[in-house]
Length: 147
Image (cartoon, rainbow, N blue to C red):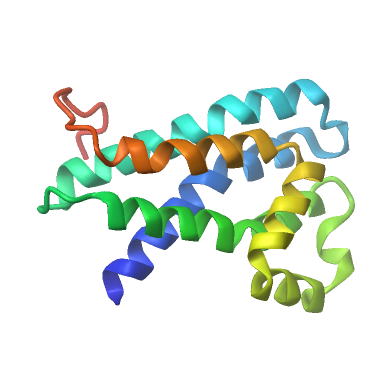
């Protein structure tokens, strides 16, 4: 159970953290070009973090369950993280905690719809499609993060 929470949290936070950072930096000046950069940045960041964690911590050869748990974390944390990100632009948490709680309970629908307005739909779909395939790769490279 602890490993499930760990991989869901790592997946969710590694995916949404660059989006939060960009929303914080740009504020209400968030543009379409920012959404395009998020489409590329979010899946790459998530893949790099997960590849590093898998290489350093995961002792089993089957990484698919960890990838699926990371995807669950991405989709589950979506409504909360997007609401926090929208707060930097003047919206977001002004809708209240009930909306965030409802969005988290109904996360598949809310994450999909909210990511359309957030500019992260492309990144969300790319990560959803690519992470299961990434889990099947055998990493032969040396990790860039020697932590």
